[in-house]
Picture (cartoon, rainbow, N blue to C red):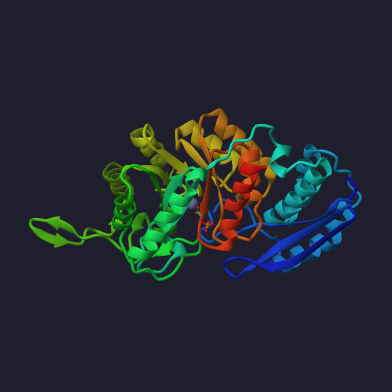
Amino acid sequence: MKIKKVKARKIINSIVEYALEVSIETDKGVFKSSVPKGTSTGTHEVIEYTGGIDKAVKNVNTKIKRSLVRTKINSLKDILEYEKKTEKYGGNVTLAITYSLLRAFAAEKKVPVWKLFTKKKKIPAVLNKIIGGGEHAGKNSPSFQEFLVLQKISDIEKNMDIYAKVKKDWGHHGRDLEGGWVIDVSDEKALKILRSYNKKFKIGIDAAASEFYKNGKYVYRNISPIKKSGRMELPNKNKDQLQQIKFIKMLHEKYDIYFIEDPLDEEDFRGFAELTKKMGKDCLIVGDDLFATCPERLKKGIKLGACNAVIVKPNQIGSLKKTIEFVELAKKYKYKTIISHRSGETNDDMLADLSVGLQIPIMKIGIGGGERVSKINRLLEIKGE
Ligand code: PGA
Ligand code: ZN
Protein backbone atom coordinates (compact mmCIF):
# COMPACT_ATOMS: atom_id res chain seq x y z
CA MET A 1 0.00 0.00 0.00
CA LYS A 2 1.50 3.32 -1.05
CA ILE A 3 0.85 6.22 1.31
CA LYS A 4 0.75 9.43 -0.69
CA LYS A 5 -0.22 12.08 1.85
CA VAL A 6 -0.64 12.46 5.61
CA LYS A 7 -2.42 15.43 7.09
CA ALA A 8 -3.61 16.41 10.57
CA ARG A 9 -5.97 19.12 11.75
CA LYS A 10 -7.86 20.08 14.89
CA ILE A 11 -11.55 19.25 15.08
CA ILE A 12 -14.05 19.73 17.91
CA ASN A 13 -15.32 16.84 20.00
CA SER A 14 -18.70 16.36 21.69
CA ILE A 15 -17.69 18.30 24.82
CA VAL A 16 -16.35 21.21 22.76
CA GLU A 17 -12.70 20.46 23.28
CA TYR A 18 -10.19 19.85 20.53
CA ALA A 19 -9.53 16.45 19.02
CA LEU A 20 -7.00 15.44 16.40
CA GLU A 21 -8.14 14.29 12.98
CA VAL A 22 -5.66 12.43 10.77
CA SER A 23 -6.19 11.93 7.01
CA ILE A 24 -4.15 9.41 5.08
CA GLU A 25 -4.27 9.34 1.28
CA THR A 26 -3.57 6.28 -0.85
CA ASP A 27 -4.57 5.25 -4.39
CA LYS A 28 -7.86 4.11 -2.92
CA GLY A 29 -8.89 7.46 -1.43
CA VAL A 30 -8.58 9.60 1.69
CA PHE A 31 -9.12 7.92 5.06
CA LYS A 32 -9.93 10.07 8.10
CA SER A 33 -9.94 9.14 11.76
CA SER A 34 -10.19 10.77 15.16
CA VAL A 35 -10.01 9.52 18.72
CA PRO A 36 -12.10 10.40 21.83
CA LYS A 37 -10.98 11.56 25.27
CA GLY A 38 -12.37 11.08 28.76
CA THR A 39 -13.54 13.42 31.52
CA SER A 40 -13.39 11.03 34.45
CA THR A 41 -10.03 9.77 33.26
CA GLY A 42 -8.14 7.20 35.28
CA THR A 43 -4.77 8.06 36.80
CA HIS A 44 -3.13 5.25 34.85
CA GLU A 45 -4.09 6.38 31.35
CA VAL A 46 -1.39 7.45 28.89
CA ILE A 47 -0.98 11.05 27.71
CA GLU A 48 -3.25 11.91 24.75
CA TYR A 49 -1.13 14.55 23.01
CA THR A 50 2.45 15.05 24.15
CA GLY A 51 3.02 18.81 24.40
CA GLY A 52 -0.64 19.57 23.60
CA ILE A 53 -2.90 19.30 20.57
CA ASP A 54 -1.15 21.98 18.46
CA LYS A 55 2.13 20.16 18.84
CA ALA A 56 0.33 16.94 17.83
CA VAL A 57 -0.93 18.54 14.60
CA LYS A 58 2.59 19.77 13.86
CA ASN A 59 4.19 16.40 14.63
CA VAL A 60 1.83 14.55 12.28
CA ASN A 61 2.23 17.11 9.50
CA THR A 62 6.02 17.02 9.67
CA LYS A 63 7.88 14.14 11.34
CA ILE A 64 5.21 11.44 11.15
CA LYS A 65 4.30 12.35 7.57
CA ARG A 66 7.95 12.12 6.47
CA SER A 67 8.31 8.73 8.12
CA LEU A 68 4.97 7.25 6.99
CA VAL A 69 5.34 8.01 3.27
CA ARG A 70 8.59 6.07 3.38
CA THR A 71 7.20 3.09 5.34
CA LYS A 72 5.90 -0.10 3.74
CA ILE A 73 2.52 -1.03 5.19
CA ASN A 74 1.36 -4.28 3.68
CA SER A 75 -0.29 -6.11 6.56
CA LEU A 76 -2.19 -5.65 9.80
CA LYS A 77 1.04 -6.57 11.57
CA ASP A 78 2.86 -3.69 9.82
CA ILE A 79 0.18 -1.26 11.06
CA LEU A 80 0.46 -2.48 14.64
CA GLU A 81 4.27 -2.46 14.52
CA TYR A 82 4.29 1.13 13.27
CA GLU A 83 2.69 2.25 16.57
CA LYS A 84 6.10 2.03 18.27
CA LYS A 85 7.27 4.94 16.11
CA THR A 86 4.47 7.31 17.17
CA GLU A 87 4.12 6.30 20.82
CA LYS A 88 6.17 9.26 22.05
CA TYR A 89 3.79 11.76 20.41
CA GLY A 90 0.82 10.61 22.57
CA GLY A 91 -1.82 7.89 22.66
CA ASN A 92 -4.44 9.71 20.61
CA VAL A 93 -1.89 10.57 17.91
CA THR A 94 -0.91 6.91 17.62
CA LEU A 95 -4.51 5.71 17.45
CA ALA A 96 -5.63 8.32 14.90
CA ILE A 97 -2.77 7.15 12.65
CA THR A 98 -3.54 3.47 13.29
CA TYR A 99 -7.27 3.87 12.57
CA SER A 100 -6.61 5.73 9.30
CA LEU A 101 -4.11 3.06 8.27
CA LEU A 102 -6.68 0.36 9.07
CA ARG A 103 -9.27 2.10 6.91
CA ALA A 104 -6.80 2.56 4.06
CA PHE A 105 -5.62 -1.05 4.29
CA ALA A 106 -9.20 -2.38 4.43
CA ALA A 107 -9.99 -0.41 1.27
CA GLU A 108 -6.92 -1.93 -0.37
CA LYS A 109 -8.19 -5.38 0.55
CA LYS A 110 -11.77 -4.45 -0.37
CA VAL A 111 -13.13 -5.55 3.03
CA PRO A 112 -14.72 -3.69 5.95
CA VAL A 113 -12.28 -2.88 8.78
CA TRP A 114 -13.66 -5.50 11.19
CA LYS A 115 -12.81 -8.22 8.65
CA LEU A 116 -9.11 -7.42 8.96
CA PHE A 117 -9.30 -9.03 12.41
CA THR A 118 -11.80 -11.88 12.07
CA LYS A 119 -13.93 -13.80 9.61
CA LYS A 120 -16.59 -14.57 12.20
CA LYS A 121 -19.20 -11.85 12.51
CA LYS A 122 -20.91 -11.58 15.87
CA ILE A 123 -22.73 -8.37 16.66
CA PRO A 124 -22.24 -7.26 20.28
CA ALA A 125 -25.04 -6.34 22.64
CA VAL A 126 -25.19 -2.66 23.53
CA LEU A 127 -25.01 -1.26 27.03
CA ASN A 128 -26.81 2.06 26.84
CA LYS A 129 -26.63 4.96 29.23
CA ILE A 130 -30.09 6.12 30.29
CA ILE A 131 -29.41 8.29 33.36
CA GLY A 132 -26.19 10.22 34.02
CA GLY A 133 -24.51 11.38 37.22
CA GLY A 134 -21.07 11.96 38.72
CA GLU A 135 -18.60 14.07 36.76
CA HIS A 136 -20.80 13.84 33.67
CA ALA A 137 -23.87 15.58 35.12
CA GLY A 138 -25.05 18.34 37.50
CA LYS A 139 -24.29 18.50 41.20
CA ASN A 140 -27.78 17.35 42.27
CA SER A 141 -27.61 14.26 40.09
CA PRO A 142 -26.59 10.85 41.49
CA SER A 143 -23.01 10.27 42.61
CA PHE A 144 -22.65 7.26 40.32
CA GLN A 145 -21.75 8.32 36.80
CA GLU A 146 -23.91 5.97 34.75
CA PHE A 147 -27.15 4.01 34.92
CA LEU A 148 -27.29 1.55 32.05
CA VAL A 149 -29.48 -0.95 30.27
CA LEU A 150 -28.15 -3.94 28.33
CA GLN A 151 -29.97 -4.87 25.12
CA LYS A 152 -29.37 -6.87 22.00
CA ILE A 153 -28.85 -4.72 18.94
CA SER A 154 -32.09 -6.19 17.54
CA ASP A 155 -33.90 -4.87 20.62
CA ILE A 156 -32.56 -1.39 20.23
CA GLU A 157 -36.05 0.09 19.73
CA LYS A 158 -37.12 -1.13 23.15
CA ASN A 159 -34.05 0.42 24.65
CA MET A 160 -34.77 3.76 23.05
CA ASP A 161 -38.26 3.39 24.40
CA ILE A 162 -36.89 3.40 27.97
CA TYR A 163 -34.68 6.33 27.09
CA ALA A 164 -37.76 8.18 25.78
CA LYS A 165 -39.86 7.16 28.79
CA VAL A 166 -37.34 8.41 31.36
CA LYS A 167 -37.20 11.68 29.46
CA LYS A 168 -40.98 11.98 29.52
CA ASP A 169 -41.64 10.75 33.06
CA TRP A 170 -38.92 12.57 35.00
CA GLY A 171 -38.20 16.31 35.04
CA HIS A 172 -34.73 16.24 33.56
CA HIS A 173 -32.17 19.02 33.03
CA GLY A 174 -31.07 17.92 29.60
CA ARG A 175 -28.43 15.36 28.69
CA ASP A 176 -25.16 14.66 30.42
CA LEU A 177 -21.84 14.42 28.55
CA GLU A 178 -22.72 11.01 27.15
CA GLY A 179 -26.38 11.59 26.38
CA GLY A 180 -27.79 10.23 29.68
CA TRP A 181 -30.67 12.18 31.25
CA VAL A 182 -29.71 14.46 34.13
CA ILE A 183 -32.28 14.15 36.92
CA ASP A 184 -32.11 15.22 40.56
CA VAL A 185 -32.31 11.85 42.27
CA SER A 186 -30.19 9.67 44.53
CA ASP A 187 -28.28 6.65 43.24
CA GLU A 188 -30.86 4.31 44.70
CA LYS A 189 -33.75 6.23 43.17
CA ALA A 190 -32.11 6.13 39.74
CA LEU A 191 -31.93 2.34 40.00
CA LYS A 192 -35.53 2.20 41.15
CA ILE A 193 -36.53 4.23 38.08
CA LEU A 194 -34.75 1.89 35.66
CA ARG A 195 -36.22 -1.17 37.35
CA SER A 196 -39.73 0.29 37.30
CA TYR A 197 -39.89 0.02 33.50
CA ASN A 198 -39.03 -3.63 33.33
CA LYS A 199 -38.55 -6.24 36.04
CA LYS A 200 -36.42 -8.52 33.88
CA PHE A 201 -33.93 -6.66 31.77
CA LYS A 202 -30.28 -6.43 32.66
CA ILE A 203 -29.29 -3.14 34.22
CA GLY A 204 -25.92 -1.75 35.20
CA ILE A 205 -24.03 1.07 36.85
CA ASP A 206 -20.69 2.72 36.36
CA ALA A 207 -20.00 4.20 39.79
CA ALA A 208 -16.68 5.74 38.60
CA ALA A 209 -15.99 5.72 42.34
CA SER A 210 -12.49 7.24 42.18
CA GLU A 211 -14.18 10.52 41.27
CA PHE A 212 -15.90 10.78 44.68
CA TYR A 213 -13.29 9.02 46.80
CA LYS A 214 -11.78 11.67 49.08
CA ASN A 215 -9.35 11.03 51.96
CA GLY A 216 -10.30 7.39 52.39
CA LYS A 217 -14.09 7.91 52.10
CA TYR A 218 -16.68 7.69 49.37
CA VAL A 219 -18.43 11.03 49.64
CA TYR A 220 -22.01 10.88 48.32
CA ARG A 221 -23.75 14.05 47.23
CA ASN A 222 -27.37 13.05 46.75
CA ILE A 223 -28.62 10.34 49.06
CA SER A 224 -32.02 8.78 49.80
CA PRO A 225 -33.54 9.28 53.26
CA ILE A 226 -34.08 6.03 55.18
CA LYS A 227 -36.61 5.10 57.84
CA LYS A 228 -35.05 4.83 61.30
CA SER A 229 -37.11 4.38 64.50
CA GLY A 230 -40.24 5.46 62.62
CA ARG A 231 -38.61 8.65 61.29
CA MET A 232 -37.11 9.49 57.93
CA GLU A 233 -33.41 10.26 58.31
CA LEU A 234 -30.58 11.01 55.93
CA PRO A 235 -27.93 8.30 56.21
CA ASN A 236 -24.26 9.08 56.58
CA LYS A 237 -23.07 10.33 53.23
CA ASN A 238 -19.44 9.34 53.77
CA LYS A 239 -18.65 5.65 53.44
CA ASP A 240 -15.42 3.84 54.14
CA GLN A 241 -14.35 0.83 52.06
CA LEU A 242 -16.37 -1.69 54.08
CA GLN A 243 -19.50 0.46 54.09
CA GLN A 244 -19.11 1.01 50.35
CA ILE A 245 -18.87 -2.73 49.70
CA LYS A 246 -21.95 -3.29 51.87
CA PHE A 247 -23.86 -0.55 50.04
CA ILE A 248 -23.01 -1.96 46.59
CA LYS A 249 -24.02 -5.44 47.73
CA MET A 250 -27.33 -4.12 49.04
CA LEU A 251 -28.06 -2.32 45.74
CA HIS A 252 -27.12 -5.42 43.77
CA GLU A 253 -29.53 -7.59 45.77
CA LYS A 254 -32.38 -5.09 45.83
CA TYR A 255 -32.30 -4.07 42.15
CA ASP A 256 -30.77 -7.16 40.60
CA ILE A 257 -27.86 -5.31 38.98
CA TYR A 258 -26.02 -7.30 36.32
CA PHE A 259 -23.13 -4.91 35.57
CA ILE A 260 -21.13 -3.01 38.21
CA GLU A 261 -18.23 -0.89 36.94
CA ASP A 262 -15.63 0.80 39.16
CA PRO A 263 -17.57 0.49 42.43
CA LEU A 264 -14.34 1.23 44.35
CA ASP A 265 -11.28 3.45 44.03
CA GLU A 266 -8.89 2.74 41.14
CA GLU A 267 -6.10 1.54 43.49
CA ASP A 268 -8.21 -0.79 45.60
CA PHE A 269 -7.44 -4.14 43.94
CA ARG A 270 -8.17 -5.99 47.18
CA GLY A 271 -11.58 -4.35 47.58
CA PHE A 272 -12.45 -5.34 44.01
CA ALA A 273 -11.33 -8.90 44.78
CA GLU A 274 -13.56 -8.95 47.85
CA LEU A 275 -16.57 -7.78 45.84
CA THR A 276 -15.83 -10.31 43.08
CA LYS A 277 -15.70 -13.09 45.66
CA LYS A 278 -18.98 -11.95 47.21
CA MET A 279 -20.99 -11.17 44.08
CA GLY A 280 -19.05 -12.32 41.01
CA LYS A 281 -21.17 -15.44 40.52
CA ASP A 282 -24.27 -13.60 39.41
CA CYS A 283 -22.99 -10.26 38.15
CA LEU A 284 -20.12 -8.61 36.34
CA ILE A 285 -17.64 -6.73 38.50
CA VAL A 286 -15.99 -4.52 35.92
CA GLY A 287 -12.64 -2.73 36.04
CA ASP A 288 -12.35 0.49 34.03
CA ASP A 289 -10.10 3.03 35.82
CA LEU A 290 -8.76 0.06 37.82
CA PHE A 291 -7.13 -1.52 34.74
CA ALA A 292 -6.99 1.43 32.32
CA THR A 293 -6.78 -1.11 29.43
CA CYS A 294 -3.26 -1.89 30.62
CA PRO A 295 -2.16 -5.56 30.35
CA GLU A 296 0.23 -5.16 33.32
CA ARG A 297 -2.54 -3.90 35.61
CA LEU A 298 -4.86 -6.68 34.43
CA LYS A 299 -2.16 -9.25 35.30
CA LYS A 300 -2.15 -7.89 38.84
CA GLY A 301 -5.96 -8.07 38.95
CA ILE A 302 -5.96 -11.68 37.73
CA LYS A 303 -3.44 -12.63 40.41
CA LEU A 304 -5.57 -11.10 43.17
CA GLY A 305 -8.94 -12.20 41.77
CA ALA A 306 -10.09 -8.62 41.20
CA CYS A 307 -13.09 -8.39 38.81
CA ASN A 308 -14.55 -10.79 36.28
CA ALA A 309 -14.94 -8.23 33.48
CA VAL A 310 -12.96 -5.40 31.90
CA ILE A 311 -13.68 -2.16 30.09
CA VAL A 312 -11.70 -1.77 26.87
CA LYS A 313 -10.87 1.81 25.86
CA PRO A 314 -8.00 1.88 23.33
CA ASN A 315 -7.04 5.46 24.11
CA GLN A 316 -6.42 4.66 27.79
CA ILE A 317 -3.36 2.68 26.69
CA GLY A 318 -2.81 4.61 23.44
CA SER A 319 -2.06 1.63 21.24
CA LEU A 320 -4.22 -0.86 19.37
CA LYS A 321 -1.51 -3.51 19.67
CA LYS A 322 -1.57 -3.27 23.47
CA THR A 323 -5.39 -3.12 23.44
CA ILE A 324 -5.46 -6.44 21.56
CA GLU A 325 -2.99 -7.90 24.06
CA PHE A 326 -5.28 -6.70 26.89
CA VAL A 327 -8.39 -8.23 25.28
CA GLU A 328 -6.61 -11.55 24.66
CA LEU A 329 -5.37 -11.70 28.23
CA ALA A 330 -8.85 -10.95 29.57
CA LYS A 331 -10.41 -13.65 27.40
CA LYS A 332 -7.76 -16.17 28.41
CA TYR A 333 -8.74 -15.73 32.06
CA LYS A 334 -12.49 -15.70 31.29
CA TYR A 335 -12.98 -12.02 32.03
CA LYS A 336 -15.91 -10.60 30.05
CA THR A 337 -14.81 -7.79 27.71
CA ILE A 338 -16.81 -4.59 27.17
CA ILE A 339 -15.59 -2.00 24.67
CA SER A 340 -16.54 1.56 25.57
CA HIS A 341 -17.04 5.06 24.19
CA ARG A 342 -15.74 8.10 26.09
CA SER A 343 -17.40 11.27 27.25
CA GLY A 344 -15.46 13.45 24.78
CA GLU A 345 -16.40 11.59 21.59
CA THR A 346 -16.03 12.35 17.91
CA ASN A 347 -18.17 11.03 15.06
CA ASP A 348 -15.58 8.37 14.27
CA ASP A 349 -17.32 4.99 14.33
CA MET A 350 -14.24 2.72 14.56
CA LEU A 351 -15.46 1.48 17.97
CA ALA A 352 -18.13 -0.62 16.23
CA ASP A 353 -15.63 -2.25 13.85
CA LEU A 354 -13.27 -2.97 16.73
CA SER A 355 -16.00 -4.54 18.84
CA VAL A 356 -16.94 -6.93 16.02
CA GLY A 357 -13.35 -7.43 14.85
CA LEU A 358 -11.96 -8.23 18.30
CA GLN A 359 -15.07 -10.29 19.13
CA ILE A 360 -16.02 -8.21 22.13
CA PRO A 361 -19.52 -9.20 23.26
CA ILE A 362 -20.70 -5.82 24.64
CA MET A 363 -20.34 -2.25 23.39
CA LYS A 364 -20.99 0.43 26.02
CA ILE A 365 -22.40 3.54 24.41
CA GLY A 366 -24.89 6.37 24.84
CA ILE A 367 -27.94 6.63 22.61
CA GLY A 368 -28.28 10.39 22.78
CA GLY A 369 -26.16 12.56 20.45
CA GLY A 370 -24.82 12.01 16.94
CA GLU A 371 -21.34 11.03 18.13
CA ARG A 372 -22.86 8.03 20.00
CA VAL A 373 -25.51 7.21 17.42
CA SER A 374 -22.81 6.98 14.72
CA LYS A 375 -21.36 3.89 16.46
CA ILE A 376 -24.75 2.22 16.90
CA ASN A 377 -25.60 2.92 13.26
CA ARG A 378 -22.28 1.45 12.16
CA LEU A 379 -23.10 -1.71 14.15
CA LEU A 380 -26.45 -1.90 12.35
CA GLU A 381 -24.62 -1.43 9.07
CA ILE A 382 -22.14 -4.23 9.89
CA LYS A 383 -25.07 -6.44 10.83
CA GLY A 384 -26.48 -5.98 7.35
CA GLU A 385 -23.15 -6.17 5.47
P1 PGA B 1 -14.95 9.07 30.62
O1 PGA B 1 -16.12 8.21 31.27
O2 PGA B 1 -14.95 8.85 29.16
O3 PGA B 1 -15.29 10.48 31.02
O4 PGA B 1 -13.67 8.60 31.25
C1 PGA B 1 -16.50 6.97 30.84
C2 PGA B 1 -16.33 5.92 31.89
O5 PGA B 1 -15.85 6.18 33.01
O6 PGA B 1 -16.65 4.76 31.61
ZN1 ZN C 1 -16.08 3.90 33.69
